[in-house]
Image (spheres, rainbow, N blue to C red):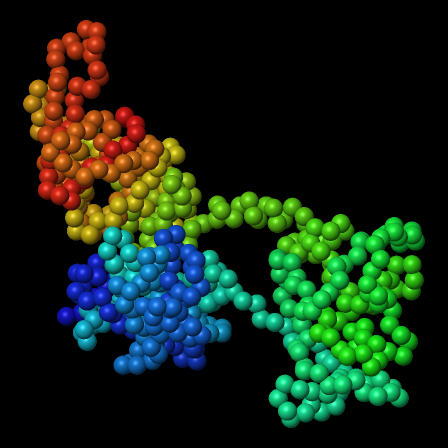
Length: 548
């Protein structure tokens, strides 16, 4: 039986099927629109670090064929075959996207879906309609992602811009189309023999030069600007001479140049790249390569700025900076590039170690966050006080586990942080975790939470307390510094002021060495109350390098 997913829902693939050979089908349509449906193979940083794992109409499979584009079939607009156990270790996510080819908006699409079929049976389906989108031209439909095991997430996140903008968002590079070649003067009709053609020009009144293989001329002016140095033409080319002196001043002496290099051709010579009449032609050089220097004489035809110069030579503009652009622009852009907003598509996205963003439009449910933790938001978002009620306040005051929360609702993105602490999103899939209220920054409202008592003997009050979170959703835990996660063993002890969280299935016992007036004698260690953890293999504790 197929499991229906809503936007923002996630599940382990092993909960849907025991197989790893999956069929992913996408059905999307709209009157008068055509769509490009693609799969992006992303690394651990959600970047397209290897273009070979961008599977689309022009590249229908990955190198080892773990991802294959199958085409339209069985009622699907496009379909893929994904073999999970053949995907390389460097690929952590497969993002399935749909973009409009040309003009149009995603709000016009008819009801569609993304589905997963395994063993001939449909096991998952995410349905969507145009009412969920507005002016977007692309949509990230769903993800297969690796988080200890392969999982599926229904994303349904709209994206402004088409396939090119989506590719740049994932860190890919868009190949620029070459400009059309400049018009050439009319020449004789080409020969029907493949690979050969008569010369474009003939010497007036003289014998024609012998025919040569028509090596394509490099389209220097139509090709895109490259950051790397320009590759010299094939054949033996003398090194360029020194930079010309200022206009009107004699040029400094230099080493003798090869005969004919940089010299004006004979008056009767045709424009044949500097070759003399009757001389066997060599490999073609770019147009104007042997043009005479213009300084000290009549000006020659203008050349493209910096053409023929060696990178780094004086007077040569930088290839990496557009002509006429402010010199500081490239430096500012490069300096801020590493701080740009992380890619969108998930409900919770960590921007860096100390800042996290939640997209309220994904999943459609509110978020509860610590009061005052919002540092930035975009869109229409409402913030309301989340009261715990009289009973909740009494329990919180009595146990020390009171959380001052605000409720975030609406359509938009909210950025959260608190006192420059490290943030760690924890995704719960029906399981439970115990976290001290002091270490909770935010969580999905769908999660259930309650105060849990830790029994102990010989300590003031007779017990310690913590918060237990359970359900399906995300919990954001904050720590002072980078924490360490340790497996639970029979001899695992932790300072109750340094422990942050532990698996709810662990058994916790308070180990106390409290004595009367323990601070009144010399030699007190300050480690009088510890927590001992016991549990089956698979249980864990999280400890921070800081004591609250």
